[in-house]
Every structure is written in C-alpha cells, then in structure tokens.
Image (cartoon, rainbow, N blue to C red):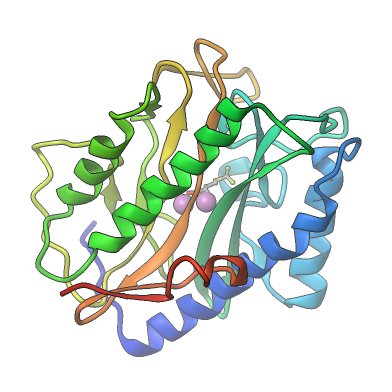
Length: 265
Ligand code: MF3
Ligand code: CO
Ligand code: CO
C-alpha cells in the first residue's frame, strides 16, 4: 500500500471525525470516578457517538474487537477491553482511545485520565508521555524525514527512566483506519519517508515506566507490560500543512498550551 495524499475535502472530513473523537474524550472526563466500571464508560461513549454525534464507533467489531472504545488501565499498554468487572479505584491511570467514523472518514485520538490522586511517578509518566507527543507534533512540516518523529520522542524519553513500546505505532488515517505509513515512536534508520503536505496520520506514543517489553493476554487484545510496570499513551490525528501541521483532534483544554496549527519556521 502507498501513502495516500489527501485533498482539502478529505481533510475537511477527517477533521470532522477527529473533532468528534476529541469531543468524546471531553465528555467522558466527568464520568472518570472511583467505582465506575470500564464497561460503563464504554456504554456512555457508545451512546454519545451513536445518538448525539450520529457517527460510528470504529473500534466496535474492528477485527472482532467487541467494544466501542479501548480502556487501558495501569499496566495495560493498549487495546484494553471495557469490562463490568474492571472498576476504577483511587490512583489508577487509564487511557481512553476513541476512533470515530463520520461520512466515511476516520478520526483517532486518546488521552490519559488519573483517577483521584495518584503517585508523583504515575503523574510524571502521563505528563512526559503527553509532552513527547507535543514535541513530535512541533517538528512536523513538509520536507522533514518521518524518522525525525521517533528520533524526537526517543531523545526526550531517554532523559527519564522510561521506555518506548515498539510493537505498536502510529498510522496513516483517512478513508481507512490504519493506512501507510507506520509512524514509529523510536528511532529507526530504515525509515526514509519524507513528509509531504496532505499526509494525515496519527502519533500515539506508548511509554512504559519499566522496560519496553509486552505480553498479549488470552483475550487476544489486551496488551500489558511484561514487567507489570505502568504504561501511558496519548494520541492525536494530524494533517501536514504548508508549513507545519494541524492537530485535527485537539481538545479545548489543550488550546492554552498548544495551538491547533503549529507553524514551523
Ligand atoms: N485506536 C487504536 C489506534 O490508535 C486502535 C484500536 S483497534 C481496536 O490505532 F480494535 F482495539 F479497537
Ligand atoms: Co491510532
Ligand atoms: Co487510537
């Protein structure tokens, strides 16, 4: 498969889908409380997406995934399946990953929520993961090597005692959920692609407090850290513009810190 360069009309639709996905993360925030189950969170998001947004939750039935969002708590790296028995408790960290299909186009975003008060180390893990995503977004512009994304994240994470998951990566997005290219979150010298205006893709670093190794649970989906250390992830969908990128899934709360359109000189 090749990298699809999007038209303005395509980007318009990916923007709408991404805004809807971002809105779900804004709406669910108030429900992240001690005692709620991850399946209740799933049901609230599902109803909101289908009834309010008149959109499709892309995860539901995607390659057999049984729920409408992913809920990844503590040592779950990604693809956690919402479940009635998984009840949030004080200090948990949870990633909610929402992907929306609207008018035939996809938008994909995720963020961490902290349940009540957590440890300083857990709060740092979440903050550093988000910061690594922002640093990568800031370098995006036409003409740079795709490799710079992973390189930027790796250089930043190296300063902490954290590690970068290698088995999962960001991806092109548009009329399909997962398109070319793969966006690695670590540095790799086989990466030779040059960014071009009209590319749309996600950046979604997964950072572990311990080592980078993973194990997949018997359900075939849930990915956990091998050493049971905690893991954090943040994800945005972006479009490469003339001189930077537009973060298509930016939330209101992020606007004071980062502008939607990042202009690089
Ligand atoms: N939203 C995830 C991503 O960022 C993919 C989830 S696939 C699912 O690419 F089937 F687990 F939902
Ligand atoms: Co994604
Ligand atoms: Co996602």
